[in-house]
Length: 279
Image (cartoon, rainbow, N blue to C red):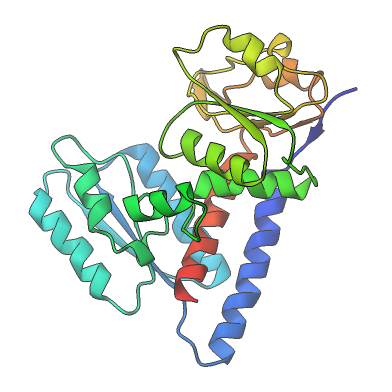
């Protein structure tokens, strides 16, 4: 029997609708509109597309948004000045610097410069540390979206074996921590893992975030497992994930498509973090 699809577009639509109501209620109470500033340095086409999608989503739910487009040639000190101005701006509750930054700019210094309470990406070391100890923190948007998707199908990770393929600071590590907080038994795999296929095949919940097109095949997946594919890759003219969807859908119990799976959730969770920052 083919797997059931976890429709990220539909779940994200419900989240955006709920946020729009929350924002409307804030405005009726005389509270300020949540504000998000997006900083885009250089002219990376993928980054430009992401920023455009974020701006549209802000407009749809009623978040005030500003876009700061800066040349790739900007100096580190000028970029930090822009961050300082946004930190001090009461209209702005969340600051997002679109990564990656052009060569020659220090990404880490820029992330640390954002005030932790405006760090809606959840990348500041203080938020990363708070997440690690299980304290209240801004959670990176993609991992937060993954957990929402599990909730949407009533998949309780408690007692289940979860395997996360990928150890990035943006997805792999935080999603593993969130699964641990939900009492899953978590294994993190990566390029040096021996017998990767065997590790994956033990997973009740398999989260794949490595950036290798269609790497995970049907024989990597435990029958009935929940498979969350975070990858977005170009294969010719097609957009594909890290999971071979056509193969794996015949083995898994639930699976996310690419596109239309985790992607829309990332933007929905960014909006949710911005509204939380305003609250």
